[in-house]
Image 1 (cartoon, one colour):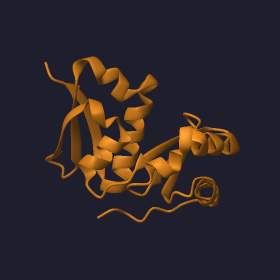
Image 2: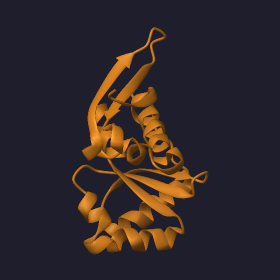
Image 3: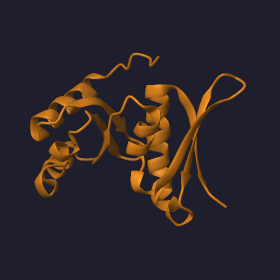
Length: 148
């Protein structure tokens, strides 16, 4: 059972701005000062609306926010949510497993040649997926591995 997510007034303000610009519904907003970005979790099926024609909505949002804006489509299924947070076309499999201490980890299998794309520069994609998986599904860690 996910914990209740509490949003700050800054996050609520950004959600309102995002929704007014794009017309898409944001479920959550994460301000990541460490990597100078804002991550919006949007409702399923609203990615096109959030991005806008030729990326106009997302670009306008980035300009107004003054930071890079990243979007993740929400899913109630933890595997699909992790796929959405990373880059689905390069993921071959995801396995969830319980550890002896009761925590859950996710093992993400990726194509050997595409691991860098999944992890992202300085690990930013992997860090985003880990943070969001913990926030929504209490998944303690995500391991990104390639088949040998």
